[in-house]
Image 1: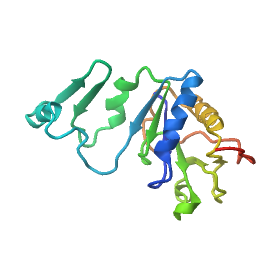
Image 2: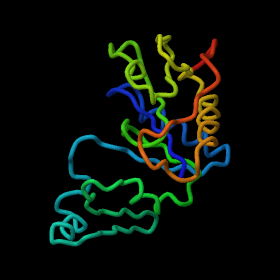
Image 3: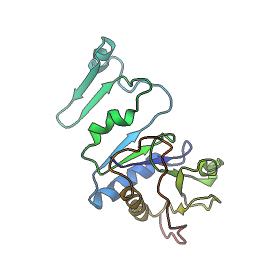
Length: 189
């Protein structure tokens, strides 16, 4: 399972970027999975629905199935790597894009917008291997233009191709360096 994290501060466009990258990556023949990592506790299931009631009654695992989708609800064991837990669900994927989880294993690409007034995480995080932005931050890693989703998909595919098919054993395992620098021109969004 090859994982690339898309990280960034709130409202910098991580979700929008991922939803634009998925069809571009699929067009290249990749099977793409995604993880939305939430740093705060909240109920994912809908209280009052049967699946939630099953869990509340003590079921270890609840599977909700419709004619075209399924959802698995289970408690997340403390101090266990959830990537190991989720791997079975992504076994048919060539690439898994993780929205967030900046401290998880694998390379990080940061989405950044100057207008929001935050400093790029890459200034303090050596594990950020690239910034995705239409601005020109001064950072110690390459900056890839946000407006060129096709080029971003190609670059993310290239990063993923350098990764082992299984997860790194530790979050601090080195990630591959990126050789190219900032794009010069972007004609359309």
